[in-house]
Image (tube, helix red, strand yellow):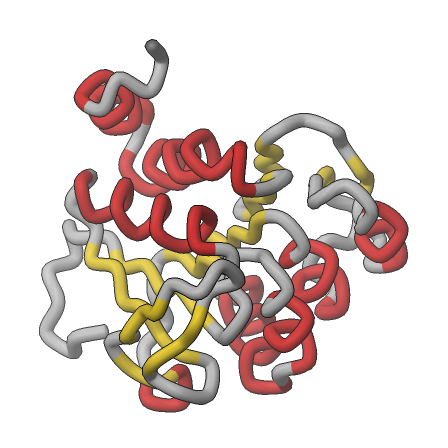
Amino acid sequence: MAGNRDPQVKQVLLVLTDGFEEIEAITPIDILRRAGCEVLVAGLDKKVVVGSHGVLVTTDVLLREVKELPDALVLPGGPGAEDLGRSTALRGWVLRMSEAKKIISAICAAPATVLAVTGVLEGKKATCFPGYENRLGMGGAIFSSDRVVTDGEVITSRGAGTAMEFSLELVRKLMGSAKASEISETILAGA
């Protein structure tokens, strides 16, 4: 995140590691950039990561190189979400974001594997990929089967099929309903 940033431009940090679900990562990057957000893609521990379906992505930076808190944090799921959840550095980021009342978002397995273990879901409504509900509950979350759930500054979603709704909810939360509707109409999301 740039030091001399325009406060009007919302900054988003999306963290990837090998095994990320491609749709859950690329869709938010694309939609948030269309909305005018600055999206910084950080590799958890390396710059070139391989998605769960073999797609290679070169990240902008390594997570350890990021110093400034963004306006929002995005965590995709997939098999790599287990590695995200084991990262002490990433758990620290989640806690700092929560303390600063910044937006924290996770989709698929990531709400259970990352957010639940930090305690940021305690008493909050949240959702996750089917089969991870118990792990979500162990973190104190109140499970909802809704496709996208927003509770305060936390946004969670079910999986690859909900990635567009998840991304548009991030735009709504960061930039307002009018911008989210504009992007949705532009890409025919409601069609």
